[in-house]
Image 1 (cartoon, rainbow, N blue to C red):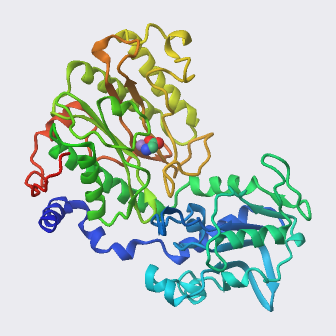
Image 2 (image 1 turned 180 degrees about the vertical axis):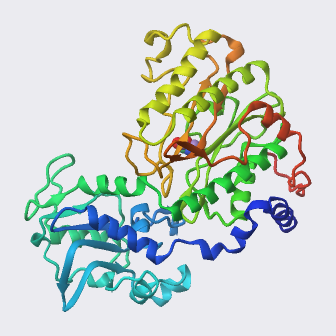
Image 3 (image 1 turned 90 degrees about the vertical axis):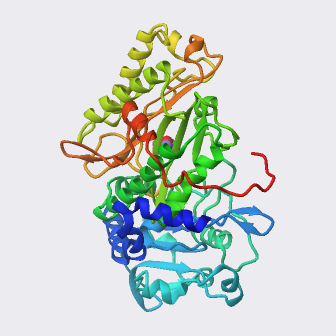
Length: 493
Ligand code: GLY
Ligand code: MN
Ligand code: MN
């Protein structure tokens, strides 16, 4: 059944993405891409500095089972490495150590036959040289005694440690690499929030993040190409769910349909926990339980789901009526959110302040909700919920960068050409809120992804309709998923 579903799905969704999924291995970022990113970092690093990055930890799920490994986005951006237990050093200037001359250095996991039997091949130091194209690469086990004198640099730049890494039985695991590094630089956190005691006062825990924001906030053409694919995949998911959803389905089933479609296009993961909330659940901003077993006729369902493709994630929300037709109140609120998004979209271009987008969207929403009587007035006392300190019905920010992180690194003062951002206004009217009962249980978020340009911004997420009438029209269309019938195995939803 799954096989026939896969065939059906692939046939019907292939129009735009077929070539991409067939060439899945050929569109990964190249070693050259990552090398130029290191060069760009080096260019903006201060004089006589070294920047040190550590791979992400492996996260334990249960017993000896780990979560699927996700690389640290900075580490991946600068190396292309998708393995744990590694350290990267980027030097401002050429170094000569151990008779080798270089300006970057990587330590990676050594080969271990038994580990590789269970977890798959490791790149090893040869792979770091041949595939990642590092001139000098070592095994992590060499880091402890590697003769680098960190006191010789004017600045040693790194991210402060979160003290959340387990010490595993493996030699030169991340825990050990971090401890060895702390020794080498004389870094010691005396107590939480208390100053550090370096051997030499050259430790900088702030500057690296500012530099990475500057770099990662402006996407290269290679990154934009991958983001467009992530967005296309995510919007095909939204579109297909619009056609196939019926009252009585569960939130989890809807989540599964989105994620099945993502994986049909080789999107390995979601960039964040999929949010699929019907009725009141849609008002929970980061609702990821998705456990309502039967979505009711007449409810709205809010679906915030983003495919992660080759590390880059989309962030798309559609809110649709489960039965295919918005009620009068649902449509009124939906269309207001749409107008807010359109107003922000029109304001979006190079040179405009980021916060203008939020102000523009909020003005439309606040004035609209006052006109409808949902807010009594735009007076703070009427709008702000004292329990949260946020606007009662539109409590969250409207825009953020996307990329290797869903809330990607980037600067938030002015919009710049090459940024890829969301515009995501929302209105959430919970039951038992002070608004009249007819407005209760209406959650609406419309979230789209945009490429900022010189004179405007390009809407990337065009494949899933945004207007209420277009959603209702698409929901009448048949879906490739309509014929899915699974056997009864005695499980009640
Ligand atoms: N999906 C999380 C967000 O919209 O920011
Ligand atoms: Mn978002
Ligand atoms: Mn989102």
